[in-house]
Image (cartoon, rainbow, N blue to C red):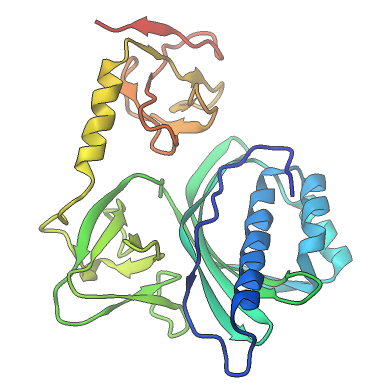
Length: 319
């Protein structure tokens, strides 16, 4: 399915959390159905960047009504197709960027029903305010011969301030016990998505003041882990510094770096001149050379712009 707006959302190979129930379909056919279910979830999420009318058109064939949408606070709405269309048309649009973080996890919860857990980085602008963070979601998807349909969407957690690429590679504490990786920053019994072994390497998004930290394991599982379960004293070996050093070397070898594009009325935020995505540069001085951690081309850098006419990129010769 094609969308009129570009989006950055790559569907990784899913991790299967539980075995297929006894008597359920197995083998290549089941695997193909699960892959189609994941594709539907991907397309449903990607439609967030479309206008309300385009969202309704693209999503209407993906849902099984009555469709249930659950908020993070536990409240939910069961919608008929008519109510759902009205709800979608009233929702504001302003999604600048979407990016799937890590691997989706698939849990089989019935002969023809799977649950897809995923983490999505979201950057939105609404009413002049920028929101950037991670949204933890799950989708119950019905697998049938006529094609998979989403029957239930849940917002499990939303955490502001998390940006892909800004994390430290540490380890789980070596306390002789496994720790639970959770889909939300609570100790509920039904939100465990995986286990971490003692001393296991883990990527930690830098949220210094939070009790629950958003993490990603080496095999792509994402979720929340209590900060008491992370060893901050010794960084993990093989943190990828060689790649970072190579990236910085390539940037230094470049002779010209453009200025970011000013955003009128948005002090402290500019546009990446290569991708037109919003970048937070609050507190940085004019002329500072920066790199967008979300840019898939890691050796592209640009400078914090001078105050002046918005939309004009200035090329500066490097010594």
